[in-house]
Length: 194
Image (tube, rainbow, N blue to C red; front, top):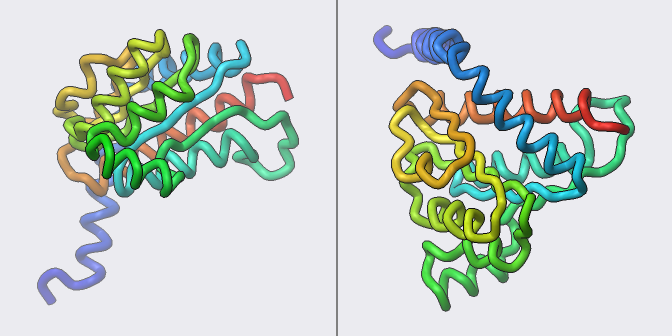
């Protein structure tokens, strides 16, 4: 049967494996971004995160792992991380009063400080509200880490570290983004004092 569930599953797994193999070339960028996160947290700074849709969920996922923990049995200090995607009152007020492109930049203006890090996630790299947040973070003398697709759009430009997943397939890009976030979480739990 054409496009049977088994064929779809095999293709997804094959595409995912291929992308993961192609991503070995970007491990140095993963580590560079990790160092920015490590230095910020070690210095008592915070991590802010923004993205839309599935990327918004990834922001919340990673912020939770920093604040609570990633691995069971690893009791440690909570790490300051804020997903800028979660406060419905701020999001709807900013969208209504300032425009959708200001959803995250307004929060960066309010909560960002020099030395903090913004993790900006956009599979296309062109989400206006994520790009504006990155620009606002630069003005606040924050570090910016961008997670995008292979094209990167406008988001790579204001970033201190830009990780462009070598794919144009949104689902596979999102899978790699969560893998990168999990790498950061594991490395931070291993590297920072408990």
